Length: 491
Ligand code: ADP
Image 1: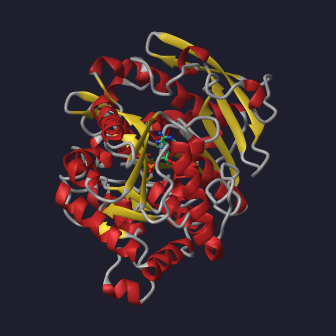
Image 2 (image 1 turned 120 degrees about the horizontal axis):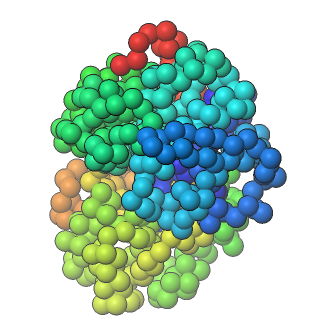
């Protein structure tokens, strides 16, 4: 199949969260399965300078988009990712994308409208004949919309191209005032409730959901949840209307990047058989690095996260006094809400022998925390898929999670039964309250105290298959359905 994958971020060129990991790993897994894959990204030249690109072609074609009153031009930089053969197309438009923060700016609607037009133009200008264009999150929600509203007729090589739209997080919808509509370059008649309009506003995520041939999200449980009022962030009726076209497919782990046997960011490598010594060495190093007392006997909980309510920092705040009273260590890495950045800093000041806080984005430290922690906290209130709980299992770090979304699908809570049958990999709590979290932390301490049980949990996690291959195969099925669905009217 020929697949064009459009994303606003992908490692190593740009990343703010899980989408960046997925947009690198899934195209790579699809290419490994023999598909012809093109990855289209905005070119964030301040994040990833040109001399570090794999042989960029400055001679690439120019793209133009008419966005209301404005005609905007950019250039396509084309190359091939050496490791996996994925064709890489970077849309260079410095006024939009040469920024420190990926999503900084009041002009996000216009920026991503331009990018979405550039994805369509990439297919035309490079003569691609994709079976499917796969768009991701609100930033590329206009891609299926453009295909469904004229691009298939205008660009002959897209006549039979199916569209797939993946929701990585329904909390972020690309919601803009109605005045932004002309800047999308779409006919004003699509500003109506059946299409892009949502309660009087322009909603780019809705555009993707309504107008794509197939919609996916990143775990089976989240696919169920977003059809409910509790998790749908207002879009649950739209998802219910599309439910026969909605599939939940779990993300995988890119074992080229997240692998304790070869991780270049670690000094001590280990596998399942050497996990005990390997993790102990990484733990000592992490404790030293973070200024925590170097102790083997105390459990070290790690957490690497955007600091928001979604990720459970409200529970950490409410449980903090009780957490600090335990004989346990905690290390936090993340950025986000001022309130939570201050919270973790304050905890570290109050109990420097128990808490280390790093406010910032630090890829290397993230890897060291995964390897050096005993347990990993992920008490999210909602979690589309979540990656760190999977990385944790691959690294022999026991995840402690709220039973929601992808966390429910990827962590098997320790019970008498799951410990006996060898499936237990973590600790799972039901109630999203400080008491729920504290119950889980106490459970973890008990399990940690029993070395045999603990090593069993570590081993169970490390031997699970989180590779992308199985998920990539599921995407293939959805792509086939999307391509077949082009003959039918969208929506
Ligand atoms: P989300 O996409 O909702 O933020 P995920 O668990 O799906 O959450 O993915 C988050 C990704 O971003 C993980 O790879 C995680 O390690 C990484 N990450 C988050 N915050 C930081 C940070 N401060 N420093 C380094 N990596 C981070």
